Amino acid sequence: MQFSIILPTFNRSHMIHNAIESVINQTYENWELIIVDDGSTDSTKTVVNKYKKLENKIKYIYQNNKERSAARNKGIEQANGDWICFLDSDDMYYKNHIDEFKSLIEKNNNKKGLYFSGVSYGEYSEDLEEYNMSYNNNLEFVLLNTIGTPRACASKQILKKHQFNQEINIGEDKELWSRISQFYPVIFHKKKTFIELEHPNRSINLGSEQESLRTLKFILKTVKIKRPVKKKILSNSFFNISKMHIRNEQKVMAFLYILRSILMNISNKQNKHRILLLLSLIGLYKPIYSEYEK
Image (cartoon, rainbow, N blue to C red; front, side, top):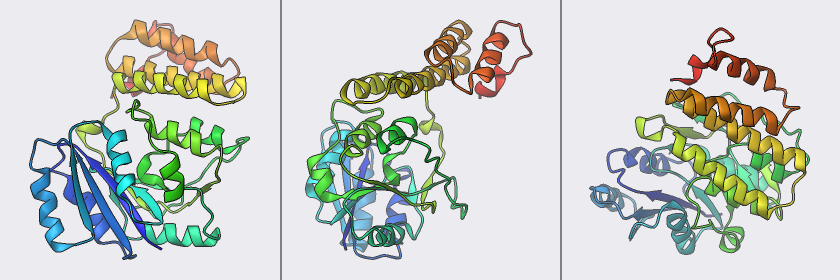
């Protein structure tokens, strides 16, 4: 069983070594690493070439900047593996990442589907991922949760048919998972074999949250999902935007988006906290918004 790992990158020469070495150090050896350089202007190619001399299973592809969805699709086109995994240039795999996916796939009789691993933050954790499976279907799960591409592994046959929408660059993974989950099983691994590394450039900002909302609205126009679930999805997105406004000290906009969040989903169990946050912003309750200003 061969795995192809798609790694898109753009001007990450100073940190891509962590990602590459985490693949080279995998306990499972039947893999290929396809690095798609999306128009880098730094020394990314030089860094990658050093590793290529040490490991012939690494491929390097350069393309003019087309954003990460196009870069991942380019990698999928070049993949030889039976299964395709993804990795970002600012993250890394734990040494058993591919081995665990292989075991999970075999445990499920090589069923073609979308597989997800757990995620550790900053360093490897032996704690197991606890998934809330109280959803009506897999589509609801992928829309109400954030599951980044490095946690995913899918049959090449699926990804040849269902590729990333190149018009979307924020929330593109959620959009793809929403399509795949309607036709194929979604299978979860509780072991946290992917490690997300924190750094200043990774910070979620107002622009990315607003773009995520646009992506969600696009997805909701293309899928059949119950109205209460749709309201919950949008409510959560409004609240995420409000937190970015708080961080930017834009209290009026924060107030408006929290209000939209509450009104969109009146029955939300989290509304009590959101109402207190609303009151806090206008000085009618002790400040609790400071936790979102970091």
